[in-house]
Amino acid sequence: GAGVSQSPRYKVAKRGQDVALRCDPISGHVSLFWYQQALGQGPEFLTYFQNEAQLDKSGLPSDRFFAERPEGSVSTLKIQRTQQEDSAVYLCASSLDRGSGNTIYFGEGSWLTVV
Amino acid sequence: GNSVTQMEGPVTLSEEAFLTINCTYTATGYPSLFWYVQYPGEGLQLLLKATKADDKGSNKGFEATYRKETTSFHLEKGSVQVSDSAVYFCALTLKAAGNKLTFGGGTRVLVKP
Image 1 (cartoon, helix red, strand yellow):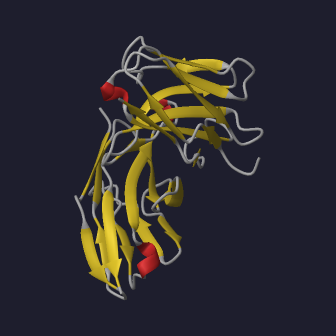
Image 2 (image 1 turned 45 degrees about the horizontal axis):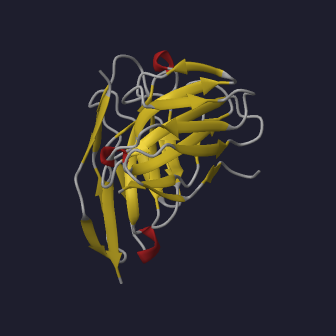
């Protein structure tokens, strides 16, 4: 596609539910990132993939968060047993490769509200 | 660690006014610097970038100059329009950190007609 596509755009989950958020990066982009953006704050890094390899997961806030990119294209961020503090916008981004200064393109985000 | 600090908003301006948003950074290394913009209801978009000292990034009338000596990357526009109302984020990447973006907290700008 022309840009980074994320689904669902909006998700309301009951506390304790599991959720899965999908990201379709720009075709051919090697690098894929997930960020979490709380209301009124800047995005915070969660995890990074280069192709199918998850090279950095230092930003994942707990072991309830899990991300995968099995074929080096589409990625899924899974949150188990959701808590209210997980309410945020989850942003996916991709770039052509890992080079410093390369433009990173963002999707519109998946808005998660945990009630 | 690496961090970005930008002025808090909201910044409210009249149309055709001059806009400055201050951004300073701390980095263990030589970062690339970015400004991203988030229009209401839309995703983050790259506005401009600079990858080395004294480079000037520019786009849509916005400019920012990479100042290594003051570790700053202030965003400026000479004459804002209502359509510039958005949240602006300063950010950096470091090659050693795998090119992941570190963002500032964002500055909301509201331009009134």
